[in-house]
Image (cartoon, rainbow, N blue to C red):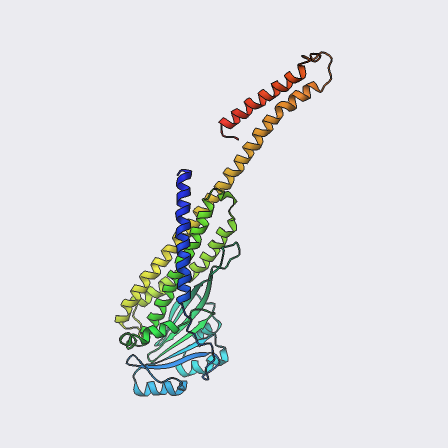
Length: 375
């Protein structure tokens, strides 16, 4: 591609990157974190405890044991308990009340788990990685681009327990969206699991779009006129952050596919169709991440090639000027040897003639290098 074509491409990339930044800031202003900042009387880690029956929300402020007893007595509805970074002591009574498996409880408390779906009897335990885009005024070699957290979900016949780790990934918007659709919420705890997985995957796609704006910015800088002077640290930083995003997205593909295809006691067939839609979105996210990784590799190789070309051009210029300077150096060296019988040594116009000859030779050499593109 010609230099003019590259410049047009850079201009269009900058324009698109600027528009994406404006849209990104607008989305940030509209985004509201609905997580409850205060601690509930139910426990220092409990964010919310709500009962649902026929897709309708029950009374708030009910004791957890009383809420579970009421749901099981009526054999209708379910309890949704939300927790944020509970300790082992805080989770012990909850694990006993819902008969949760010790291995799943350990994973939920200590976090740092790989995305997965496991079945313990009639209880389903899912681990999801949440992601959040970290806003920055300018991308540098040390900028944090992607922040990750974890979300564990216990799903039973009459309960949903969500355990969140990290400062983002609030489930407030998910709860509000489900409560606005009673027909979907009436399908039970599996509908809640689907809504959570769908929200997490949608966040993946949102973060991917925002990371693409950073990649476009780096690409524009590399293919600018002074692209060889671009900081390669920004490319490496984007690759590191993209790897963090890849660790969250790619391992989740198989668990979501299992939810969409394998029979689970708490996931009815009509909900599995929704998980197939989530699986398609997740596949799209994984493909975009793989494409971004390849694109960053190409950008890095192009930058290294530009640096090599720039260094070769500098070396050619240095060599050309050294050759030009060698002409007067050679002439002065010869006449500086102080022999008696030198050409035109005692002639009045010998000195101006020698300077003229040196100047003409230097000019001819300069023109030759200039014509060949060395200068």
